[in-house]
Amino acid sequence: MSTVRLAAVSAEFGRDLEEDFAVAERLIKEARADGAQLLALPEACLGGYLLSLDADGRGADPGPPPLAPDGPEIHRLAALAGDMTVIAGYCETDGTSRYNSVVCVSGDGVLGNHRKVHQPLSEDADYASGDGFAAFDTPVGRIGMLICYDKAFPEAARELALDGAEIGVCVSAWPAARTDPAPDLAEDRWKRRFDLFDRARALENQMVWLSANQSGTFGSLRFVGSAKVVGPGGDLLAGTGVGAGIAAAELDVAEALETARRSMGHLRDRRPDAYPALSATTGAAAR
Image (cartoon, rainbow, N blue to C red):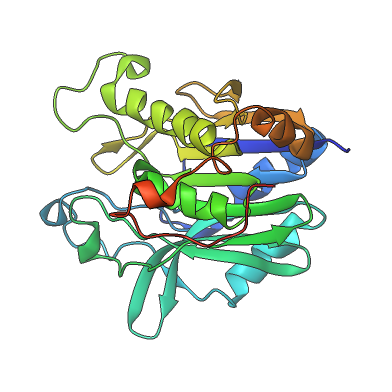
């Protein structure tokens, strides 16, 4: 058994790619100095998110710059990652389509990529939708990635768990409530939902969970921060609160999963025949 140090970021990113890379480089260096082997940066950290969740509130903003998954910007991110595994959100271009995507890299290159499937409000006016979920192997373990609203759907995280994901990573640009926002961001109801989803997805799938999020403001949006590391029992291992920062925790992932699943294995004890309305998934068994 061996331990791994996992870290998730709460930070502010905007349209200027050079500024975003400067922030990412600083955070990667800080996490490396702290011994982190896996670092999750927020959704849309390369180029910023949307100025508003309403299409008519975005004005003439062209949106985030579209980047190719094998382009120079992703290669630059991989070079910064070096011996670490780094996850970051970006706007992916594929022909005439743009996707809200997240990429996982190390110094060896791209390890995995996910296109956001579930789109809130008018996000579909700017992005095409992804169409699936898959886990992949990395130097720190088998990872499954989600983006923001994806985590509101239990089926998404469950699909990753059934595909053998040991570590779930959800990157977000999750804002505070649009109506009647709480004066104290820590008491905001959308922040409460954000935290509940993180802990529930970890617990119901008995997996380690990293949650990264934007902080500060961008356009009309005020983000709730709240990056965290959650254990497979739904326990909060580290968190940033609503401010900027890095949440980091060290644990033996394999041992933590084995312990959580020893008595009650939520994946092992599923009864797909009892809920036929859900599509039967034939992924890998719980590890």
